Amino acid sequence: MIRKNQAFLNRVNIILDMILVILSYMLASWLRLDFFDGQSENMAAISTKTILLAVAYSLMLFFILSMFGFYNTTRTRRLTWKVKTIILSVTISTLVATTFFFIFRLIDFSRGVILVFYLTTNFLLTAKYTFMRLVLRRFRGQGYNLKHVIVIGTGKLAQQYKSDIEAEPELGFHIIGFIGNQNLLQDKNAWLGSFTELNDKLSSADVNEVVIALDPEEYSRLWAIIPACEKNGVKYSVIPFYNDIIPTNPTIETIGHSKLINMRTNRLENLGWGILKRSFDFIASLLGLIILSPILVIIAICVKCSSPGPILFKQTRVGYNKTEFQILKFRSMRQNSEEETAWSTNEDPRRTKIGAFLRKTSLDELPQLINVLKSDMSLVGPRPELPHFVEQFKETIPYYMVKHQVKPGMTGWAQVNGYRGDTSIEKRVELDLWYIDHWSAGLDIQILFKTFFGGMTNKEK
Image 1 (tube, helix red, strand yellow):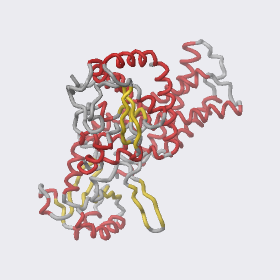
Image 2 (image 1 turned 90 degrees about the vertical axis):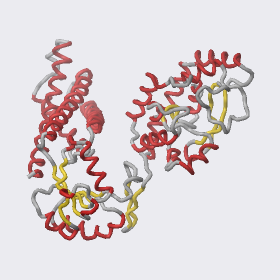
Image 3 (image 1 turned 30 degrees about the vertical axis):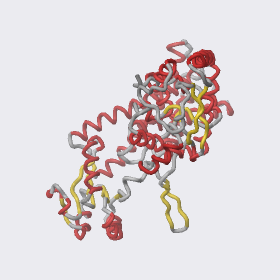
């Protein structure tokens, strides 16, 4: 029943999106030409021709959204993913449509209408899916629109899945029960039967999906479980026994009959995204150096007058692909013999008076814009560490070296979440790995925004 309802609701959902797009154009024409300019006679105003073009545009937008998997029947997509996909798809379709209109001169369109249309389309679609998410959350919280799941397995992974589902009731999953070893279950009433009873349980019409969560020693049973799911036409998902080490976005490559799961890939390995990030870094760092040059000169003079020694402090750090580079900072300490092996701490006695202020406000790190310009660093990424500490941490902290698969940054996800300086290195690595797995251009902008508005000061005294 839920599959039939879902298919019907998907069709209704798509039709509503197309109607919203058409209404968005009509609204944009009215706002831009009638309400603001009073030019209702303009050819870009509402007409049969423009409505037909709006319908054609809505079909193109539907196609692009479908290419991104927007209408796939999954409940695990977050609202933020939907909003990002809407904005990206509307941007692409608007650029294509505008180019098409310009080349073939199908209509004398107003650039103002196109801009308002772009904004209203994003707003209406985002508002619709936000509203839908709120309504579905309320419905599912009351026990409606649930997807009924059988979990095959009763061990650690199965219990973890149960906890995760209970923590997010708005997803609308209901666990019917567990199949496997009854002795491993805390709630004996949730046990549906042993592995030998699997086929009978899956034949029930109440089962919408199966989640296979076997412990390593039970994996030989997969060759019986999967055919049973296929035989009964039940959709199934697998939580691998290496769940705790698999990244968020693994990729699968095929060589002949061998399927290779690439455990450590990130979006920045994509040439297009890499070029985008590097271009932004280059332009932003160059503009930053130009705009901040008066402040840089003043700081340089203060540092030179504070104590004997150079203005800039150069130190070897480990960066992208474990290559070493010279990081630049305004010197905040007196020259000492522990520069390459000692970690700066809160109330470090080696600091100068101006150095304490620079470190408190992170102004000592402004010369790293030169590192970004030279491509040693990025504006956003994991903070680079001294070779001395890298050798220590890679032996004691799991996955520490993964952070070197992207360029280090002047600021990062760990820093804007309060983990900078003399704080837990384990937590910093955890946040750095999250950043690598979830990187997006929007996330970088979010981190930079948080850095400028409160993330530059720290708790050093």
